[in-house]
Length: 89
Image: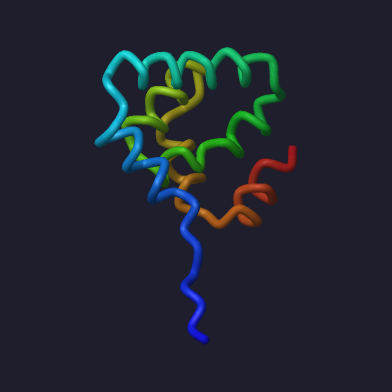
């Protein structure tokens, strides 16, 4: 039996780009920013995987949190493990 590798970001990206009306996307980003705003910066940076789902989605969350978009974009290219190690401190 062939098992296809799971990509956790394809469906959320398609939902954000192709299904959600703009207003719903704004609410989603606002909710994520509101919930992450009290988190430690290293936790906020780990959540940059949103860039993998959709660059606009990730960018809007990064801006909302006041994070450096270049750093966020770089972290989003890493694996979950690499991102955790890069944001340990």
